[in-house]
Image 1 (tube, rainbow, N blue to C red):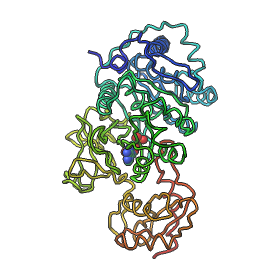
Image 2 (image 1 turned 30 degrees about the horizontal axis):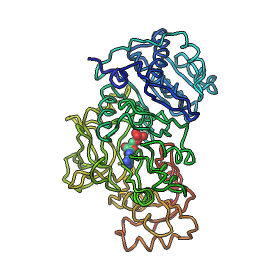
Image 3 (image 1 turned 90 degrees about the vertical axis):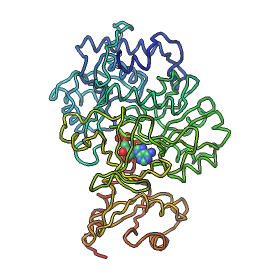
Image 4 (image 1 turned 120 degrees about the vertical axis):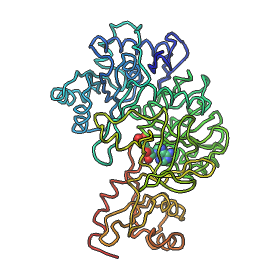
Length: 506
Ligand code: AMP
């Protein structure tokens, strides 16, 4: 039995059900997507690309880019999506590290990629945001019928580089088994069916937009409304004929700013999913108040796919990412001893299951260091399991602040600050401090029209938090630095505030 994701999720190649609808209104059926991926796969195979060869794609979002992903899997090769925002220097690192046989890039970057390929090896083709380019031209002569190469469960399907906020970016190796199991689990968990229409406004170089959004939709034979990027003015009207939205928390915060968001404009929708970064309980509640819908928050990461999800039926708890998915085991361990902790105690989140990746590309030592001997992967996220088995994330391990020997979890401080009138949002980081090792420091965005000041925030916190947890400084910023997936870039804040306490000891 083959585990090739294409055979598992998109088996009937001539299906005339609509699979993708573009913003122009043009549609592509499952059969047409299969045919396009077949031509691309034919081209790849003709270039000698097969099992274990890497195909890198640094391309804008397009239906043809989705077909390239499927074609790579069909040829038995390994798909390597690259964030379109990477600079040539960053791209060169990934190409040298992964040594793709083929690099598909936007025509605007062709010269850069050719220069990189000249040094690192690899053939270059182009594909633009409209789905045009040398790849499409070259593939046109190949047959739409391609015999998908059988793959085993543990064979590699994709390598996705982690964001690399600590040290070198690592290539997470994901297998066909990982992707197939995660997609089928989510179809069942989220009650996905062929009647669903998904609003897809996420990038497709990341697991959220590629594996969660596309694979789950394919597996259910549902339809994708394919949007180039997030645009509240386009998403809101699209809700009238859609059923599901998958987004990062920023999507929901921005949609809430629209006066047109209400129970009527969202009346046809059955599911709003949030993930990739923490959804504030406040956003969850505001969304419920405005639309009557409870956002379903889930938790996952590049290395593991989806780990936990709030239930489709049953309580969705604001501030929690829900229970471990079926067949996925989650445990919390002591940061120093690695011993499993009881309910409600904060520690390292560890995970084991068919979703967990095969290791980091060419980094056996790093891989070994992040797995326990009993197969659990050490996620690097800190959290606790409550007595009902719901997981609560308190932040990344590397964001833990140790001040005067005490552990401070940024999320606890951020939650308190966010509750202060006049505050829109905050991010708390540890900054080098001569006396305390690290000084708790908060970046705060004021609510519009608010003039709340440092003193008012510190006074409010002084009655809510132990002294060691109280920020030493509050720095007001216009906006928190976020990446394309809506994650707050705490490393940038630590860098920016690096000198704050160097001349001052308080
Ligand atoms: P990535 O590998 O880019 O998908 O990032 C994974 C990381 O995003 C996780 O390790 C978490 O730190 C964070 N993350 C993902 N989903 C959530 C969530 N629902 N709440 C809080 N953090 C999340």
